[in-house]
Length: 266
Image (tube, rainbow, N blue to C red):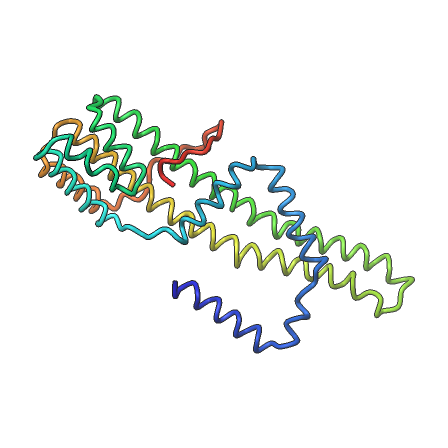
């Protein structure tokens, strides 16, 4: 929480130090042109469910209690020992206490005694859909990072055209609005793209990579148990994955078409 409060405190201190001069950087028409134009294009370009899912991913990346890969590996080792010693019924008793929906699904497949091939297909498909959600979110934020400066430039051009038309007929003091529009839209576009959107994109990318690594651990764990591997073998597999620093699932060249919301791994 401190790392979020500190930048906000520094920004508030800068505004307070600037005093009335900070009000010079507030121009409602410029802000509406930059933000309104960007959001309009975004709403036209992407379905509402994808934008809503992006909001959920971003909220989760800031609010979800972080579980390290090492902690997850320890939990998987514990469940593996429990499964081999006491069987599927003991594992089923743990199911309600598992918070990770993806891990809960893996446990359910083991309890149902599904074949290894069936487990592999279902888990890999589910992992890819979760990974696709993060890729889609990154794509939307990348589009936003391009649109904000673009509409800032559009506002600048509009302001300059208006300024040129009014220069011959209006007194200098009447040209302030057009000149302000020309300058402030570029400022707003640059600030929003670089100080808001790009940090959010970096945050989402880091969360996606961490989530993909956790998914890979769970997939390898459940497949090892489905093959009948001993707990010691499962532990060696998990330790190998941790030491190799596997950070993400394979990413296809293009995002999958036919988007649908997938809820196992939120």
